[in-house]
Image 1 (cartoon, protein in one colour):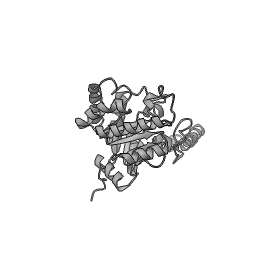
Image 2 (spheres, helix red, strand yellow):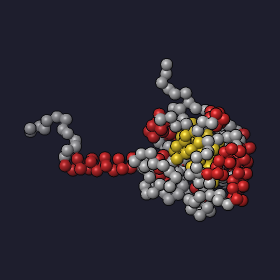
Image 3 (cartoon, rainbow, N blue to C red):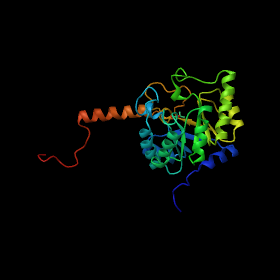
Image 4 (cartoon, rainbow, N blue to C red):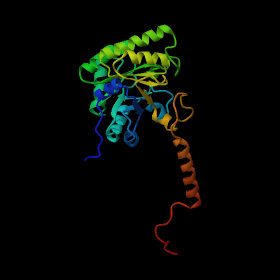
Length: 272
Ligand code: KIV
C-alpha cells in the first residue's frame, strides 16, 4: 500500500461543510514549509500575498507581483502532496480588466500549478469571478478587511461594524457564491456576522479574526508559529515560539564558532 495521502479536491470542502466538519487552512510560501504543514494534515495551503509582509519585509501587500506569487506557488505545490493549493491574485493583477485577470489567474494554474486562485472584493469583482469560473478557474473570494485596500480602509482595521456595512457584506458574499466562488475568506468581521453569512451560504467560509463560527479558519503561518517580526495580530493564536528557538540556536552557533567549539576536526591536525 502506498504512503502517499489521497489529494483533497475542491468538492471535498463543500462536503466537509455539509457534514459540519471544520476546515483548516494556513498560508505557505515555500516547499519545505508546505511539506511540513501538509504532513500535519492541513486541508488548504494559501500562497497569500501576505508574502510581501512576512517574507519580504514590506509594510503592506501592495508591492507583491505576479512573478512573486507564481514562483512561490510552484514551490508550495512541490512541497504539498494532499492539501489544496490556493494562490492569491496580487494587487493590480485582476482589477484593470477581465482579460488581464484571466491571463494572470491562468498563469497561477499553469506555471504555479495552483488548484485555485483567491481574489479580494465584493460586488465589483463579481463579473471577473463569473468569467474565471466559466473557463474552469476556481475562485476563492475575500471580504471584510481586504489588505489590498489598506489605504482606503484606513489601515488593518476591523470591518463591517455598522448595520449597513453588514448588509452589504452579506449581499457581496451571496453574489460571490452565485458567481461560482467555491469558498470565501471573511477577515476581521464581527463573529455574529461571520456566523450569519456562513449559515446563508452553501459554500464554506474561512474566518481570520472573525470568531469561531466560520466553516474553516485560516492563519498566516508566520503568526501561528511565532515567527512574526513585531507584534502579531491580536486574534492570531501562537502555537509555537519558533522565532525564539531560532534566535537561541543562532546565539549558540555564534558562540561556538567564536570559541572554536564548532566545528570539531574530522581528522587529526597534520602536526599533532
Ligand atoms: O494573504 C494572505 O495571507 C491572506 C490571508 C490572511 C487570508 O489573504
